Length: 330
Image 1 (cartoon, rainbow, N blue to C red):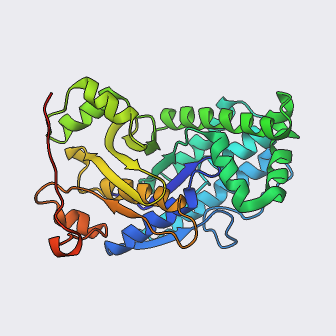
Image 2 (image 1 turned 90 degrees about the vertical axis):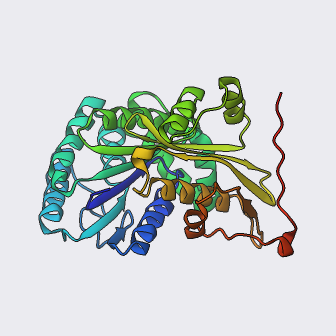
C-alpha cells in the first residue's frame, strides 16, 4: 500500500486501538518510519483532545484547519496511523450531538477526505456484527461510569433525543444506526478503504479460491465449512473480497487455522499479515490470565517462511510425535 496515512475506524469495542498499534508494529518491522497516535492524545497532529466547541460552525472550521495544517506539515517519508478521527468523531458530533442528517455528515467527512488526498489515505473499517456484544466487552474494561457517560451523550441530545432513544437500549440503537450511516458514507467517498467483517458467504469463498489460483471445493462443502467454522474473518477492498481466514477453536486450549486465502492481486501488500494478526488479537482477547493456547496449521509446501514470519515454527517429530493426516472421499 502506497500511503502516508492509515486510519482505523469502527464502533466502540471493535478493536480500533489494538488494530492501529498492530499495523504500526508490522510497518515498523518492514523498516517503515511510523507515527501511531491514539484518539484523544493531547499531542495529536490532526485532532483535538477536547471537543467542547460552542457550535458546529466553529467546530467544523477548527477541525478542517487542523487537517489542512497536518496534511501540509506531514513528513512524506512517514506513515501516520490514526484511529477514530475520520468517521467516528465527525459522526459523534454531526449525528449524535447536533442531530444532523446523513447527508450533512457525508458532506463534512467529504471535506476532510479532499483535504487528506495528497497523503493517499487508506481507511480500515472494522465491521463488528454484534454491536451489543462489543459494548458488553467494553463495559467490562471501562466500567459503569463510562457507560453512563456515553448513554447520556447519545440519548440526551441530537439523534438520540430526536428519535426518543433512552437508556442502554437507546444507546445500542444509536450505535447500530451510526454503523449503517458510516458504511454508507464510506462507500460513497472517493477514498481507498478496506473492511474487516465476519459475514463471508459461499460465493465469495469460491471467488477467493479462484483468485488465489486454487480449485474451489464443491459449493455444499464450502457452505458447510464457512457455517461450521468457529470464527471467520474476511477482508474486502471496497466491496470485493480479497482475503479470508477460517478457524476452528475450543476457546480453551486449541485453535486450528483451516483456510487462509489471499487473492493473488493483493499478495505482498501486508493484507495476509494484517488478517492473521487481526485474528491473533481476537484469540488473545479470549484468554484469561495465565492461560496458554496452542495455534496450529498445516502449511502448504513452500510457505514455511511466510508462517515463520508470523511466529510459527516447524515442530519436529521428536517434540510431539508425527503430525498425521488422512483424506477421505465420499
